[in-house]
Structure formats: structure tokens, C-alpha cells
Length: 185
Length: 257
Image (tube, rainbow over all chains, first blue to last red; front, side):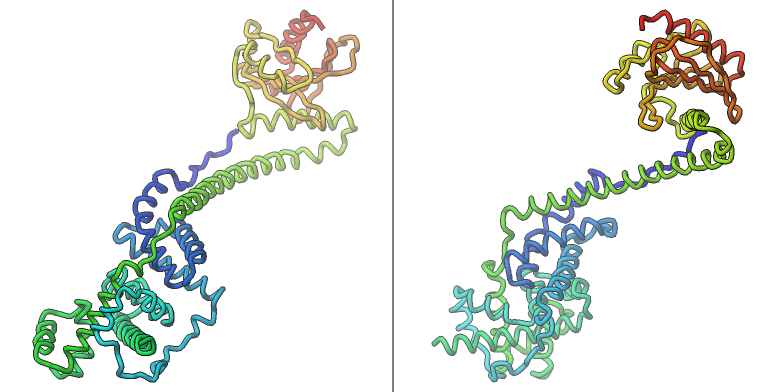
């Protein structure tokens, strides 16, 4: 008498790993850049990206080709938010204060911005000070060059909200820059 | 298009997200409007400043290999999990089978005295060998393959009689434990009947006649010779099992003790 021999369930084999490496690993710079901007810390960004990659591998069955970068960024973003919730809950509570500098209407004139383009520090600081949900649309739009539709998919937002967040984020950046440049001069 | 409308749509315009008609409308407006043109210029300046690659964080060199190691570990863990779940499943099934056999044997074993408990174990060992597809650890009809296999696994060297001429084909051998006693088990076959020959060292005593008992339809033959205790268990008929015992005894008594 013999026991019936069941088919062994499929296991993630070498080729799955290879496929994953090919489709997802090349987007590491985008993943790291996003995580770094959202966590604002090198070490935390590394941990979050590693965690995101492990998650991505677990969910790789759900990836049916297409844009590996957008798929990965969705997971990175989700991992970032989970991490922020656990470690920096207060950052997610930050309200977008329209009148933060009392400089409504003031904006750095184009020449000033261009002149100070080398002064990345100011821009970097201004960007880091944005509430995370405004920061992320700027990163995805300006640094990753993604379309509104792609951003909407990654951040799980309506396209209209993507545009209005971008508008507010840019306005804030302009104000902050104008304020800093004004006080520096 | 009014200035308000243009400025509302300006972000869509600079991001290239507007349709052709509105894009052209705004372009025309910006050419002529001294209020909207600077706003547009500001946006463009900000955008080009943002696109400066210095704002783009590049991952540190070791991160990629760190990630590969982590993913590899998960991949291996998944494989292990599957393998182990399969192994536990088969082990569970084997244990269940043995439990059923023992449970069916249990009412009988109650009326047996202690020596009979050993008989039960032998019968169970025989049945188990047939049930879980674990008849042999080493499968060979060649006694010169089976005998060396036991070396280093036991603190005694079991004789492996060659009985093909007598009509008992050697199938192989395996290890079993009875209590703390390790036993060598040789497996022979005649037609479809399997014979398990259990052996372990015993107190040296004169080789008496083999005793035969029957338990649950299985015949058990026991004898001792040359400091070894033998048990043969099979569902072969009693006459043929006696023939088997004679053949084994002939061969083993010829061996130097």
C-alpha cells in the first residue's frame, strides 16, 4: 500500500528570481530617490527600499509586465507611508498652511531662481519642508517625469487632485524660495 | 480665455497634460498677456531648477547587493517553506497510517504479556515497512551492496545471506529501532510476499530451534544463533516461512561467529 503522491506546489524558482531582477532591479535609483525624499534620511531610505523590494518579490505574481518602475514606486510609496506611520506619525498630520510665510502673491522672480540654481540647498530645504503628500507629487512629476495619470495610479489619487496638489506645492516652493532669498539678500 | 482660466490651467499646460486646442489657446494668451507671462516664466524657472539632477538622490553602491541578498533569502525561504510543508504533510500522513494500524492492533495487545509486546512491535514494523513506501533504505539484490551499507550505522555487522537459489530474492535492507535497540532489517521477497528479517545482537546461547507464532495473520519466526537474535515476519504461509528460516540458518551458522 502506498500513499498517493501529490504534485508538489510550484515554488519560486530561479527563473522567477531572474525575471524579478530584470524587471524591477533596474528601477532602484527611482525607488531610492522616492524613499529618500519621503523619509528624508539616508539610512531609513535604504531600509525602506529593501523592505519594499522584499514586498515586491512577494507580490511579483501580481506583476503582469508593463511599467516596472510605476509598479515598484507604488510599493515603495506604500512602504514609506507604513514606515512614516510607525516612526514619524506626526509628519503625516502636517496641515498644508497656505499662509505660512504671510507672503501670498510674492514669488521669486525667474531670474532670481535661475541665478540661484547652483544653490541647491535652498531648493532642497524648501522641498523637504513640504508636507509629504505634496512632496511626493513634485518628486514623481519633476524628478521622475511621470504623467498625471501615472502619478494618480501610484499615489491612488484622482488626476484632478494630482494637478491641484502640484499647483499648491509649486506655489509653496516659490513662496519659500522668495522668502529665503529675500532674507538672505 | 481669461487670465484666471489660463492661470488655473497653467500647471496642466507646463506639464504638457492639456489637449491641443487648449494648449494653443494658452500659448496665444501668454504671448500677449503681460500679467500671465511672468507667472508662466516663474513656473518654468522653478521646474528647470527642480529638474537639476543634483536633487536626485542616487542609491549607495552596496544597496543593490543588500537587496539581492534579502530577496534571495525570501526566495529560498519560500522554497524551504514549501518543501517543509510537504515533508510535514507526508510525515503526518505516515504517522496517521501507523496510528490507525496500532489502534486496530491495540485491543489484541492488551491480552498479551510483555514478550508479546515485542511481537506487536515486530508486526507493526513489518506493516509499517509495507505502508509508507519505506521498505528499504538500501535497495539491492546484491548482498555485497547491502552488507557494506550497514557499516558505520550499527555497532554490529549483520550477516546478509544470499538466498536467491532457495527462491527468496533479496530486495534490500533498512535500519529500525525497537525501543533503544537498533536493528538491521533485511528484506526478502518470494512471489508477492515480503519477508522482513529483523536482527540484533543477543546474549550468546546455543542455537535452539526456531519458534513460530502467528499474530494478525502474520507469521513470526524467532531464533538465536552466533550471538544474534533473529525475527522473520511475513504473510507467507507457515511452511514456506519455515523453509526461509532453514535457509537463513544454514547460511548464518556457516559464518564464523
